[in-house]
Image 1 (cartoon, rainbow, N blue to C red):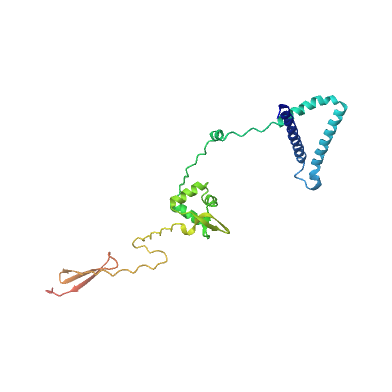
Image 2 (cartoon, helix red, strand yellow):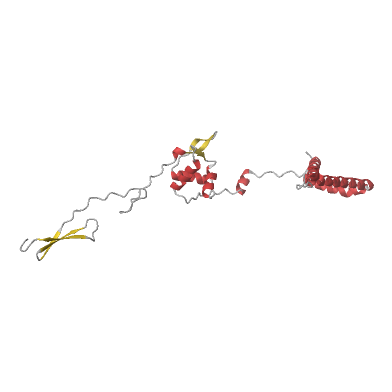
Length: 253
């Protein structure tokens, strides 16, 4: 194709593109006259007014050109320059090697989590709820609602791997089957260690423990003159003692 043919083709294509742009801008300007705060025909009064102004402007321009054809010597070059610019061929895409060199490789962020494995497993169990499993596609959003943090797919997978939770390829949610986590794949919760109440403390709702057998007390005797003093410690109150005087008579043992 010769230079003249290429120039003519560029002008023709540019004229088409320029005409389309002018029509689109005029249509958008007319539509912008619609009132959103009104309804019915009253809302479109502004559109009709703008359309009438546009038609009136074109009619005035046509009358000027008809009355003074020399005006075209100023309009035609301006339209030709605009069409020439609009008909500029699109730039060729960059070569694959150059494009790869220009675009930096995305840096994969390391998934950071402050949750322990047990806490993460509990969150996943809460996300599953009464269902049999949860899809990986919806798990980041559910975890974000529970924790208030941003969860990515990479962070979820890393946390699952750290907690030892296996990912299944056939998890059903409703009528859809996709990759996810099954409820039976979650580790069982460790049983809570029973807390032994301190001695003498009775847990609420339980009867007090039956006291063991009372320790046998030994009576102690002291002779005071002709009387024998016998003291026995109280088995229920160590601060008390029972005292009994035994009269043995003079010269008795």
